[in-house]
Image (cartoon, rainbow, N blue to C red; front, side, top):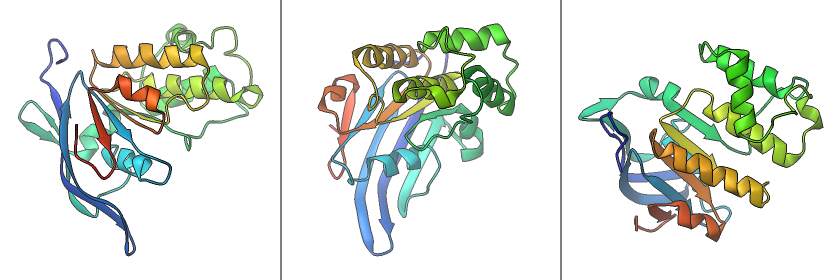
Length: 215
């Protein structure tokens, strides 16, 4: 499925391998997805799921092989892609002494977005934080922190959404939120998630079992 009115964005990876010192994480990975599609990277803990997600986000480089985003027929540079990527991951940091609204205001300003307070409050309400936006983040539960991470990742409406263990701190209501977010992201771009939760495989159009071929 392609995003209506836009040339499809493709992510193509070829012969990708990653090693740390002499230890190979995985090798010979290849595949392609495009706007409207969801890729699930599956595998047990320690299999390199998060590493591959970071490579797709440009946060690390492959030891061997190429990873490329292409819009229509035009390859996009890492610098051009960086503002188009949103990431939800365990290592995401927030200012815990600030409120959720203040955190979102800071990120929006850093990205050069002209978002009104009303628009940011609407974003926080969309992830289930209405009524809790003026509380310091240090008082948040783990599930609330994850909801805020989604708000921070989505504030700029990214064309590429990367999700690392996307429901690890969520109850069923939180899982339903992620399902809604992934459905909406299909209309905007592509989604890649890394998980060892077998229930989340159903979100993918393709499943890449680390060390295996795209299926």
